Image (cartoon, rainbow, N blue to C red; front, side, top):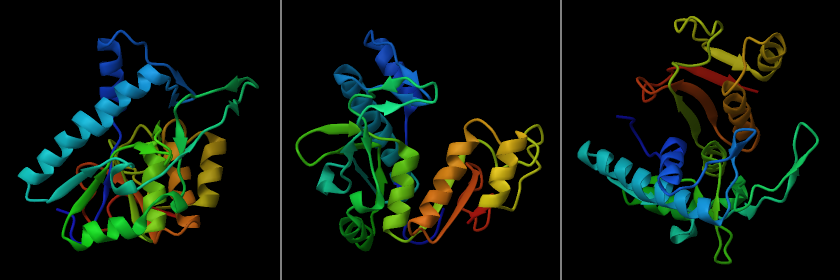
Amino acid sequence: AMPGPKVLVHGGGVAASRLQKSLGQEPRMVEGRRVTDSDALEAVTMAYAGWCNKHICALLQSAGCNAIGLSGCDASVITAKKRPPISLSDGSVQDYGFVGDVTPASVNAGILEKFIGLGLVPVLCAINHDGKGLLLNTNADTVAASVASALKAELVCCLELPGVLSDIADKGSVMKCISSDTFESMKKDGSIAGGMIPKISNCLRALREGASSARITGSESFWKAGAGTEVVL
C-alpha cells in the first residue's frame, strides 16, 4: 500500500529461536543480541533467509507487490564485518560468534537502485556476508538504518505499538515528534525504556548518517504518510 519505491528489511528472531529449539539448540541472548555459533548460524540462516524471507515475498506477491527476496550475499547487496569480542555493561567480555556489523558504506546502493529501477521491491533479511565466504548474522534494525542512510531514504520502523508513547500505559498517547534532547530526558526519567530505546537510537543514527527522515509507527498504519512518531535530531 505504500506508494513509490521502497525496500523492506525484516528480522525473524521468534522463528529462529523456535527452529533452534526444534534442532536441539538452546538460543542464547546476551544484552538483546543472539550469540551465534556455527550451529546457530545455520539455524538463523534457514529461518531468516529461508522461511521468513520467502514467506514475506509470497505474501507481497499475493498483494500485487513485486518483491525480490535477498540476503547480503545475493548480488553482494550488503557486506558485514565480523564483530570482535566486546565489553559488556557488567565488565565481562562477550564473543558473539558469527555476528556481523554493518554501516551505510556496507550497502551496495547501486545494486539496490537497479532492482528498484526494474520495478522490484527488495526484501532484505539480516543474513549478510564478509566477502570472503563467511555468512554473518546481523541486527535487522541496524541493516534498516544503514540501507536508509545509503539510499538517502526515509526510515520507517514498524512496531506493534502505534508509535512512541508519552505514557506507556496509554496507546493513545502517541507523540507526533521526538527529538534527541527529548529522548535523552525521557530515558532519564524512565518514561522511555526497554526495546524502544534501541529503536529511537537507531533512527537518530540513521539521520546522522544520511537518511532523509525517520519515524516509528505501528503495523496497522505504517504506509500512511506522517503516521506514528517522527524522530528528529
